[in-house]
Length: 195
Length: 82
Image 1: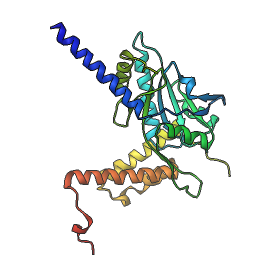
Image 2 (image 1 turned 45 degrees about the vertical axis):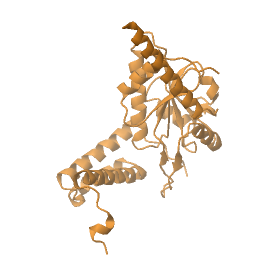
Image 3 (image 1 turned 180 degrees about the vertical axis):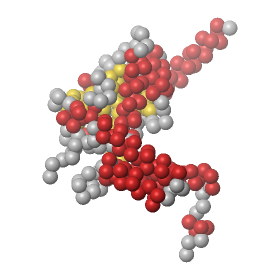
Image 4 (image 1 turned 60 degrees about the vertical axis):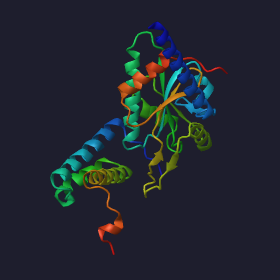
């Protein structure tokens, strides 16, 4: 009866809390970053507080994976926009190729995807620190005679909650619909971790 | 030297289309690249060289993966290499 349901809900809540504490214990994405957006304005991680964020690391010279993952991320944001009463999700792209992806290059690239999609770049050191804060692997390949190269990197989309912590991460195999469903689930069960 | 701009959305789509046409040709000719030279040249002209290399590797990987799925893994020693 109702007693059993209550106990089950309590158990689910404890499991959720434990999972969130484990995420925090992993210190995944605890580090701050100092980058610049496509208008050149300095942005740090704390600027994202108070919002839900879907964050992807990539580069504009990427042959296929980055456009596909960005399409997927933006499609998930669109699906969530269709659900009444949900807070907006901020789609965000951070480059792993700051040598080529300056503010102007990022602006041109991201323009194609979603009107609210923002991009961040910086110096090599700043970008390295930001990728490191999210444990994102980055390795630029050897340049060809034209100076062109690809950047090997972890392919992950991170969900950040309004308290700034990573709530989930999604790989290549997840669809836009699965992303939207997962984000919605996180939003509906959101409880900020105690400080 | 001026830095090369990244391909635009239109250029990406054109590259992927040329790649897919080339791959479809290979699929229908048992991967005989000699039968698909025109499409190969179109693919190379539509895509940055780095992307051509990336897609060539991807095709090799997909073929290898298919081989694993159908034939199973054969270690190099057992394949009779001297």
